[in-house]
Length: 224
Image (cartoon, rainbow, N blue to C red):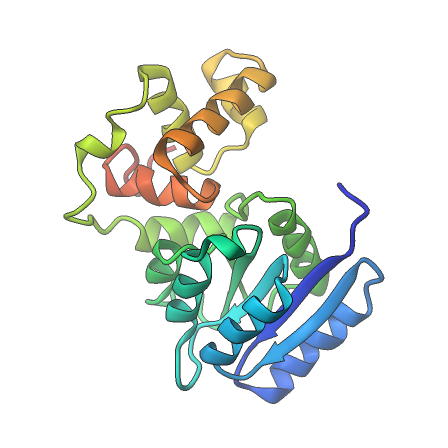
């Protein structure tokens, strides 16, 4: 991973929670806390003002919730390098599905171990998505398996048969190394296929590929 300093914003309406996350970030020399927000609208303003690499975003906040804030941040080309990590209290939060569709790159429970949260920040800052942990797979299966009438077969039309296979593997939460092993291709070839799928589907990152895989029916809950 790069040695760059990663800019982080914390958005949570609970002062105690927010200060806890802030203290954790300040304790890491390679992380730079560039702002704290108590509302979704403050998070959006801070995103444009500080151009953070990662925003830790609560879902339930006054004025503007974390989902709408995420949507506004991820839909603006000026914030292409900003990734949103949703932090939720419940492991079956009904809003997680909407957060993923809004452009969130991953999510964790608020009671996640400090080191796991720090690792998640690094993962997102590197442009990847947090989809590997078991809890993330469970949540994705619970909430992404809701068909979007606007997402139909034509979405997959640009993909070759092999690229559809790769998208299916990504949708199941597999890493590039696992995809290579399962499809009998080299890791480099797997990485290339994933990059091409991202480009063809104009997806922000792997989290968005997971959403597409479920919504188009390539993957259904329980498939492995």
